[in-house]
Amino acid sequence: MSADAPLTLDCLACGACCRTGRDGCILVPAEDLARWKSLGREDLVAQLQPGHFGEAAFATRDDGACVHLGTEASANACAIYEVRGTTCRDFERGSAQCHEFRRDAGLE
Image 1 (cartoon, rainbow, N blue to C red):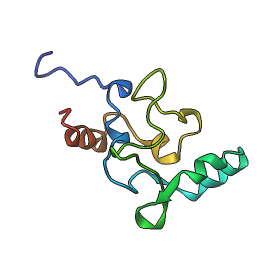
Image 2: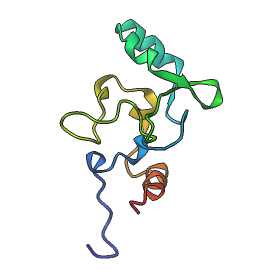
Image 3: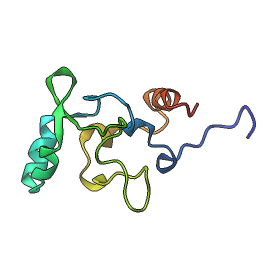
Image 4: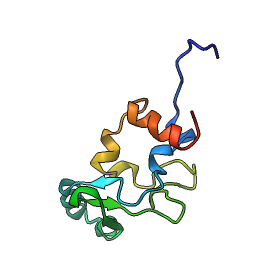
């Protein structure tokens, strides 16, 4: 790849945004709590922890990864992808924050 070629990002080969290493970072707004409850997904609500700014957040494992990161098919896939939270749905691949997480993970 030349220096001018754009970096092609594959989320399933990365997962850095789901491995922040910091508790309380992947926020879950109240709308997600209501949506999950209406879907009968109390299991997701039970796996939350206190997050920044007084909001709930996805719990993290000892390695700093979101508890929902990883499936049988891929270590970087989201186990709750179809019902994932707003923060995750709105996260943009290739955004400044994406590159920040990738740099923190030593991928850039």
